[in-house]
Amino acid sequence: MAGQITKGYKALLEEANAAIETLEVGEAVALHGDPGVVFVDIRDIRELEREGRVPGAVHAPRGMLEFWVDPESPYFKPVFGEDKRFVFFCAAGWRSALATHAVQQMGLAPVAHVAGGFGAWREAGGPVDLPGSSPKKS
Image (cartoon, rainbow, N blue to C red; front, side):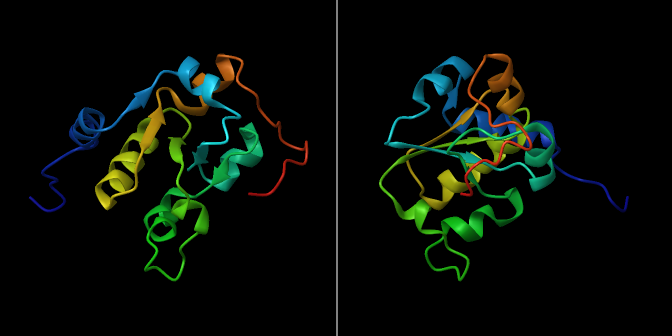
């Protein structure tokens, strides 16, 4: 049948979650501000503008992530060449699980992602720059 997929998103998430480190939101909030940790927000820019940002997080859109991580890419971002721990997050933790798995397979380490994403971060009282509050560009 045309359009038939052989592996769905649930299987992809299961594989990713079995292979990566997942931080509970409290663990992630406790790491915020640690100079050895880079938080990476992979949400779409419209999500950031609508819901706010984690202060100091690097914005790396999911669609460009692998290109920004690879030093051979013309789109490489030097932040990904730093000797730091990278903590990825999205809105709810699905995209960040897949993204963390992808960059881990590329050799970026150490990496982890935040269970529950930005929604859980906000609910846990993690710091947020709200829309319109002129956050620093990253």
